[in-house]
Image (cartoon, rainbow, N blue to C red):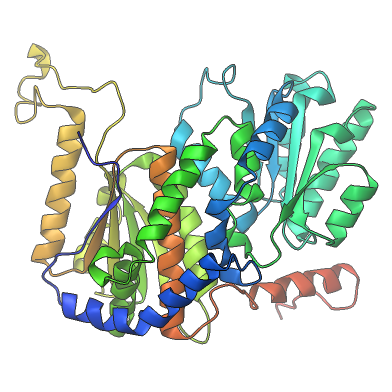
Length: 441
């Protein structure tokens, strides 16, 4: 029986060594001990307290509320942006797949409203008019940690007007998830919306295992218990003080080594199309957590095998400015598919007829790794045992812990994003007429 544990492989011949990992581990040991103390003392006042979320006792309450809210709903609309939306969307789309045709009877149709665009918003409104007859068929989940996220408030306001025009009985169809006592929290209390709290100390991009991710996922019939179990398993591994047993430490050391070797890009190369959205979640995690004080690695996302026909040439023969993280799924989805020996295609498929489709894709993947090794292009490999809630819980926790380890090595704050606040405050000033629009002259 195949292992259900995520595997991290790093044995390559390009200079990244056990010696470097051990040296990095010594630097991180005090921090790992600090994290253990935070867990032991159940300290929820620090940003690292996102590690405590997988010990949460709120699962039963969240499942009950999700069941109650989704009973009559045909459509769930999640309004959020960045950390308020990406983690949930990554888990949902990875598990449900690219094609959802025919699944709407089993699962609520889902709209991730993470952009403010007039054409898109009009499309959403028209869709709701056509697909629903009453407000009871729509569940809106508004997520904003600060409670002041500009794009999310715009989108909610547009949908709120739509619900009001439809008549009464719509407040029960809104769930607000925000920080306690934020302006949004106060407004939601006044309007009698259902409220769920985002822990004050937990940064948005580290909040997927809080109500931010758990409530909408439970409403969408994702097994949040398995998700949490996978995350907890990985968290415990990533607190190991023996460096060889700590996958987050090894991954952080690889990124640390890459930056020291002049690599400015980290390419997350997923050999499974359904994982593309995970790459978008990871891009935000790495960019917002680590892009500070002149430091950072630009995260990119590639897909196998499609991007072997687009960016592979650049990766092999272009600037040697990137390291790669390959992500592969060991267990393919069922049913398995094979290439049948059809007479009319005999010459075209002679080299792979009778082969399993997954076997062919795996051969391509192995060949890509061999080419990278031959070219001495640095890479590390993450193997997911399967596409499941447990595996995704492991993957997300691994990446979050590797990110805070690297931030500690770089002596930067992994949990804030001061540069992002610049556009928010300026946009509000422009709208208020206090600042002029940008002049191209």
